Length: 97
Image 1 (cartoon, helix red, strand yellow):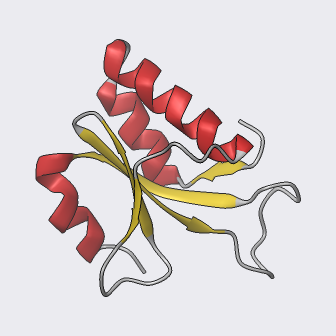
Image 2 (spheres, helix red, strand yellow):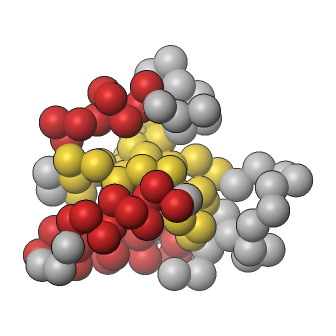
């Protein structure tokens, strides 16, 4: 996925989801985010700027833009920190830095 960098925790979250319909939907949403699609369900996280959440079925993708000075792929636009089930959203948001 060009334009997206997954944090280690997000990679672990993806492995935990496992193969299936949910994983397919998440991968498609990440591709759409990378290409700049405008039809995504995105909202800023209240009180947690600059973080946003992308809703994909029962899962939420927590991400922010890549900031200058971060050692990531030069073409990366977005840093995905977590991919969680909606029931775990509050706990995941509290761990964002």
